[in-house]
Image (tube, rainbow, N blue to C red; front, side):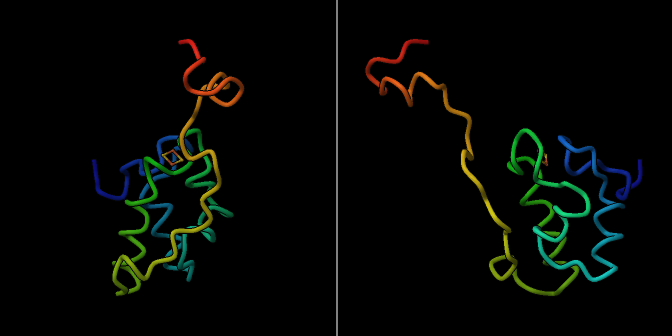
Length: 94
Ligand code: FES
């Protein structure tokens, strides 16, 4: 398996090759890539792929990682049981 064939965003089944193709076309942040590839919009909301994509953006642009726009992160960033919201932590069961 080649590096380009690696599936980076497992939720949306997007490969490194697809991501690098759009980076080569001038896409420079995660929100732009979300719009064309849906990366970071799957069930995990980018927890499985965001850092990898940001690292590739940093490499492609020559910018340090902390200068790369991480894109819009929308809650909930972690699934929570409705019971926690409805009854509070002490009363939630299971
Ligand atoms: S791995 Fe990309 S959204 Fe889940």
